[in-house]
Length: 167
Picture 1 (cartoon, rainbow, N blue to C red):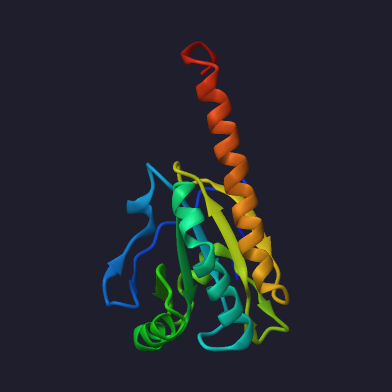
Picture 2 (cartoon, helix red, strand yellow):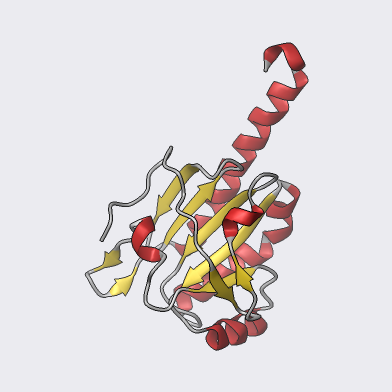
């Protein structure tokens, strides 16, 4: 397992299939918005359902802050499609069968068995701005992501209000 990415690291690029079968590359979304990339253990489990619904319930807030939410697990495209439909998820779920993306991000396993639950906030430049790792507190990932994005927006607004000479 690679070391876990930290704040200031460049997020590795990748391409995976979404719940609709569309091939998605988060790097292509960068440039004008941040990415909230969250890795979770398994579709339809209690903790993962809680986390997904919490992201769903705050999704419009993330969009208003200029961010895109993307969930990643090793479940199949079909499993993701069922999970997204059952929970009415408006965001992208990516199928990382075999954990090929989980590895370069350094997402740890719990007790060596259960895939970890880690959220990365990736800025418009592709740099990791925050990492939150908590297997047992899935809803906290949503709170942390919103807090970090609010901070980014506040800083951006502050710089813009100072005018061009401050930049």
